[in-house]
Structures are given as C-alpha cells and as structure tokens.
Image (tube, rainbow, N blue to C red; front, side, top):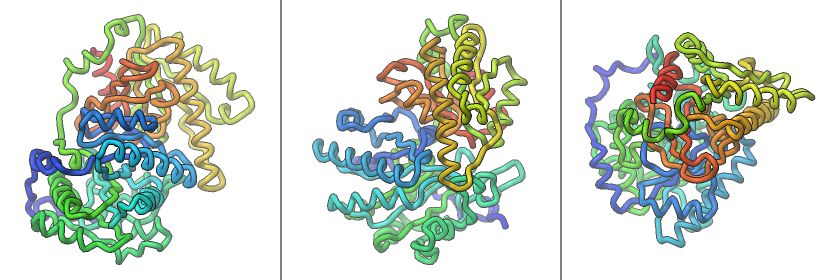
Length: 473
C-alpha cells in the first residue's frame, strides 16, 4: 500500500507564514513540552528551558515570542514519572501565566515516528486544564515532520525512504523496545496506544482533501464540533497543510475552544508563525563559537547515545571523512561492578585527546533489553546516565570548542546533566530543517555552542556534514 503520488493529491492550498503571524496577534502563547530536545530543530529564535521554576518560566514569557520550549525529557521516564513531570511543568506555567495575564496553549511535542507516552501526556495536561477551569475540548494529533520525510496522507503516517514511502509501522522505529506499535493509520494507532479507551472510529480525520479544499471557517467548524475527549488527526504532506490547519485552530480557539496538541517538529514551526528557513549562516555560526576555543587549544566533542541503525552508519561515514578519536563506553561493563572505573578511564582518555583531535564519546552499539518494557527503560536510563556523567567530566576537564549530542534522550541528558544548561536560545538548524544549534545563556555552559542531533534524522552523511561545518569555523 502506498499513498497517491503528488500528482494525484488535491492541489496544494498555499498558506504563508505571514498569514499565521497575523493570526497570532491575539492568540494564546504556546508552551511546547518537549519529551526530548529534538523538537527544536525546525525553528529558530525561540527560548528553551531545561528547568521550570516560576522565575525560569517568567523569563521565557518576558521574551515576547509566540511560544517557548520546556525540555521535559519524559520519553526517558517511566509512565508515572512522566505524568508527574508533565503536571509539574504545566502547573508552573499556568501559575506564571496567571501572574502575567498571559493565556497559554499547550503542545506535547514528541517523536515523528510515533514513539513516546501517548495518550498519557495529553491526558495529564487535559486533566490539569480541567482543574484550572480551562478545559480541553480535543487533542490535535499532528506528528508530521516534513523536513525529514515523515508525512500523514489518507490518515496513514509514512516515512520517506530511498525506496519510496514506507508505512511507519513497518519501520525500525515501530520495533522500539519501550514504545513499539503495530498501526500506521493514526486512528488505529490511537486505539492501540490507548488500549481501546479511544476507539478508532471516534477519531476525527482531517484529510488533505479537507485541508486543501476547505476554507479556514469550514475547518474551524469541524474542530468546534469535536466532543470531549476526541482526537483530531491531521493529514500533512507540506508545511502549507499544517499552516492551513493552524489558522483553523486559532480561529476555533478565539471562539472559545481549547485544544492540547500532540505533535511532531513541523507543527511547532507552523504554530509559531515561522517558515522553513535555510541553515544558520556561516557568519552567524562563526560568531557563536568563542575565538579562544578554536585551534589546537580544544576541538569538538560528539556524544553519541542513539542506537538506531542510521546513527551507526553516520558514524562510519564520519570516520571515512575525517580523523577522530573514538572513546567507547562498553555497555556490559557499565552495568557491572567496575562501571565507575570504566567511566574514569574514558574521561581521562577523552579529555587528553580533545587537545588535538575531534573526540566521539559513545556507548557500544549492542542494544541490551530487559525482560519487559520497564526493565528495558531502566537499563537505557543507567547507560544514558553513565554517558552523561562521562561527558560532563570531560567538559569540566577540558572545555571543547563545541558539543554535539547524538540521540534524543542523550541530547536532553547532556544539556541538563553534563552541561548544566538552564536557559538557552534556539539559533537555527545546521542542515535544512534538521539538527538544532542552541546558544546557552546561563550556567557553566554559557556561550558553548550546543548541537542537538536526533538519532533518526538525516542520511548517512549528515553527521559528517555537521562536523565539517563546525570544524570550519
């Protein structure tokens, strides 16, 4: 099965980012609860928080942007811990909003290949909105990531591969040890992940025909007719489709409807009124890399925790393109009695090599699973903790020129635990629509360029291309 070709799809309805920007004038400020940092790779010049005290949220609100990110890292947590964190973050944001008179909308940003805690996270946010008297009329489900070839057509979510479009449930991502699934049609996926609580037949599917051939008012009326607890699944093959949907969502919200968004990276760009932009310019990139960090004093550090096949292939191409020193943490050793000594030896070797060479700090590629979902997640957390502890000690010993973190959970842990980033600005992408560059503005990593690189994006050359850009500055 494959979707219709672009020639047979409904004619694209052009909707510009400028149209969305105009509609954002009186719109609710969107808080993007990001379950790992890779949701930032489609936008630029938005704040991102890794802590959520009232003071941190007030700082983000004072920036006056259409929205801001809060890095929750919930994809790495157990369901109970994820629920507690989502509630804590959302409640803090609502308290800060009350103090400043700002109205908020909430987005639960997760994986464009459908991995993550759903419907748990939208349930938690919706329940809290009920407690605050705001309520939640429906969940808008839009996992598309157009830059990376993740699109929804005919209610089915697809991945673009070298061989064409592949139903997402047939991909390696659907076999995830913690968040695996069987369904590619979003309505069926919702029923599967909710264990039948949300039947597929109750999911409202807004197809490309609806989005491209209907008016904003028609779409807004469809949204306004949703019943409590329904899910609205959006088709999207282009950013224009998402912007058309956003105009209708904003219209319905102005009329009093309240939605929680469960979305991929592309919806963030549409909802904040941004257009797809080219990667950050060389001049701007060079300005972000401190001059005293260049040259032989220190080179770059790449921290790799992702275990998907694409990451392994990207590392192989990097090795073909340039020399680097690979410091590998052996997973069985990390899980054993001598794990601490193993980390110390790796830190010493990496810090020494940074003086003259690019350093890749990674875990061994073998994937160790537990007997069940909870055990697999616990093992992943132990390995991730060891990697981020090692990365933090390396940076403290010899500050690199920049840090690249490869993998979603890894990117979060390195940002918070290794580098102590609390507040940052998203400055743009390093490749078209993928790989985000942060500028930390607080904490010990202030001024240290930080590159967030998901495990499941790009092609085999993408990691080497990013390093080439960073090393050329």
